[in-house]
Length: 243
Ligand code: GLP
Image 1: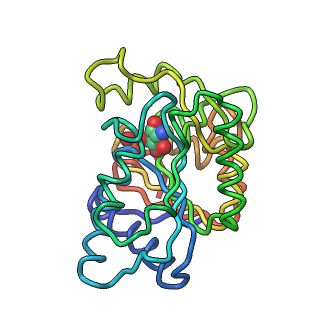
Image 2: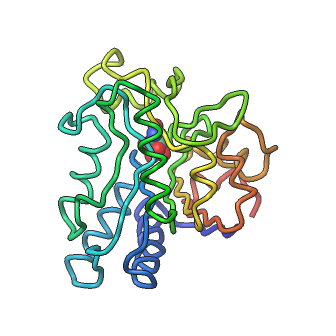
């Protein structure tokens, strides 16, 4: 595991965008696993800037997002599909038909999840998976639990996640209670994993993830077992980790 210390959110975003750029340059037809949330917004901005400068070409890239709220349509401005279009896809030359997000409108959870597992399998596998970190240690929407959930599944969001994500909605009552998410097995099968973490509020959970026991109670702790993980975290997020 490589840990890069960034000065702040901006520096974290540049470092992460550099790693993603390297992946695209080395393998133009790569499969990127992408994430939503506040953590990757700066990374996506930086990628757009380098695309506009002519340094990056997304035309052969496939992207597969981690998760989507169940019940939200792609047009809903709170959906993760909308987020991805707005924060990245609409600003680069990626072929939208090769950008995948779970289908939040599919009410048959088994079908939604099977379809998504097939998309991942048919892509040939994720070359680089970008991850943010939830305050309770979740990755994608793999919430703390009794066991590591394997492939794409439907989750009930925890109170802490609903609380953390309510800032994007008009009120807490509007936050969907369920989501479809890639499972730990899907994530662990990615060839490389890049985790970005920013801010003091993530310092305690980041320490547990990196140095605590590997347990489903802290889903991201499983990353200790992956053989190609890069963490890019800012000083505030790394503040509890002895240097
Ligand atoms: C959300 C998403 C995750 C994301 C995490 C952290 O609930 N499902 O994929 O990584 O929470 O979000 P943020 O980056 O806004 O702190």
